[in-house]
Amino acid sequence: MALALGTLTGFFIGKNTQNTQEIQKFAVLLNAFQSHLQQLEIKLTKDFEEKTHQNTEALESVTALHKRFQRDFQQFASNLVILFAGETHKTTQAIDQIETLLKTFQSQNQDFESKLLNRLAKENHQQTQAFDKLTSLINTLPKAIQPLQREMIHVLKSEGHQNSEAINKVAVLINTFQNRFQHLEQELAQKMGIAISAGTKQPDLTTDQALLKAEALLKQGDLTRAGLYFSHSLNQNPGQWKKIQRYQQHVLNYCRQSRDNGEYEIALNVLAQMETFLRTQIGHIKQPDIEKLAQALTEIAEFRQVTTSAMAAKKLVETRHLMKTLLVDDLGSPSTTEPQKLTQHINSLKTKLTALQSLDTSLINKNGLAQIKQKIALLENSIPTFETQLATAQSSATVSTLVQRAEQFIKKSKNEPPQSELILYYLSSAESIIRQLVLLAPETTPFEMMRLSQKLELAKQEIAQRQSQLVFKKIQQAFNQLQFAPKTNAQVAIDKLITFKTSLSQQATQLSAMRFIEQAQTLMETVNSQIKDWQEKQRQRYEQWAVKNILDFYSSHKDELGVGTDEQRIYAGIIEHMGNIDTRYLSTSASTAYHEVFNLFYAELSHHLKIPLSSDMTFTLKKALSDF
Image (tube, rainbow, N blue to C red; front, side, top):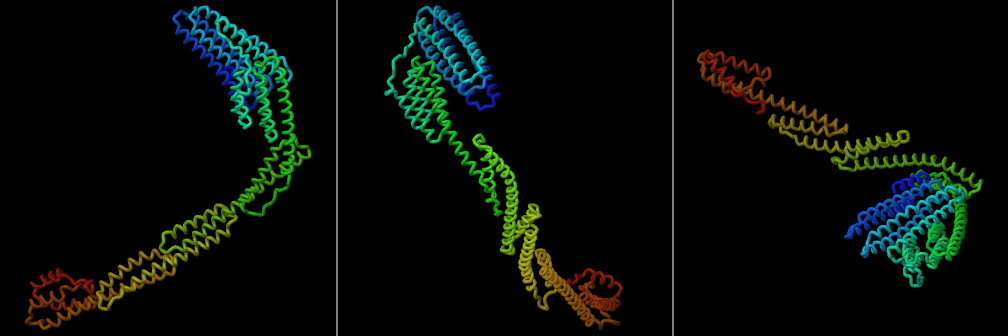
């Protein structure tokens, strides 16, 4: 079986035809036949093993003969495929005929097998004799195949004519093999005592429900189900010509209706199937009906000829009309730059080009062929030109879209509040689009890029002005709050000014408009100047306080100078009036006054008081500058 299937596959591959369905059908047929023989072995083995008598030797003999028959039939199938592989006939028709014949053979074999097994199961006579008869009959099957093979080889190799005749001869040979097997079946049935029904009773077609159902389905156009019902009806009375002829007429009516509707291919396919079916009935019908079968085949051939001619005429009219339509000069030169319309135009030209290339040239004269060739060349040259225009239009459309998006981002950035976080996003997006335009089509978009860049820069300046104005307004308001009274503690004013200066430095980083940056710098200078003024005022206040203390001490103790000096009183006065003065903050003149007064009274003291006084002056807490 594997050899037969492999050879068949190689044949169809070599032919370069689409015969996948035929390969599958033939493979399924052979596999089914092999499976059937295996099941026959299992059934026979099981039936005989259930017997109580000794039949081991006979059983082994029958099993061996079945296996031999199986091998011989596989070789027959392989040879059959190889023979067809060398021919150029219509493989589909040949395989359909072989398939139908072998299915009939298989069906009859299964029916006889069932009767045989039932017979053997019921009989109580000696089985050995029955085995011997069965062995002898089955042994003749391989011998029946051999002459069939020889005859088939002779037919296919010797014939040089059309293969349809060779196919018919092959069909006859297979029918001969089938008849031989039927003869063996009848002989075996007679020896084993199995009754074979004659089947001579003529059926009543008016009450055949399966046939009526098939005809009704055929009128509805359901070919598949109609065929199933008809097969069921015909199996009840194989070879019944009236039933076959009646169904054939219904099929012709269906084909006639399909042809009238312009469905020529459907009609021809159904005719081919009907013709194949009729040819397979040669082995079933009676001899007087053979002429009727031949007449039916002739009727189908005539119907096919009429249908083929009608289809050719219609195809010729359609081809001429299509050719006339396709040769119209409508290449056009669309002035539009819209990509969608250009794409539609290009697709229309490509469709026309494909249609021209697909025309059946066998129906066109030389002048028409020349016109078609010229139009195809024109289309092939024009389509790339339009595709170039389309690419340019698409690029322009893309540029236009990007420009619109950039302008939208710029507009949105200007409409946002000055402190909105979206401003930066909109401006960055617009900048990104401008860079994309440079990469996309730098040679076609300089004006757009320049205009967009200017818009973007103006938007940045405008936004910077609004943002800077808002920031500086807050700075100005904070500065205006720094109003100090003349007697304000200098350190308080200095601290507030320094705090404002730090805040000003931080907020100045948020300024981007040059006008407000300059105003912030001016304000910073003003603040620095005010800090210096308050620092100078603070030093002056300290010095005034120190000089007053020095004068107060001198005025109150000048009378102690000379004879009768009260050293303790002078000691205490120096500590009280001058001990807390920090000379670092005094000017030169004030510092001179301090030292002259101190030295004047210091000289009046005894030596044992000078060192303690110096120590006390050093460690006396000084008046802080920040107190003024």
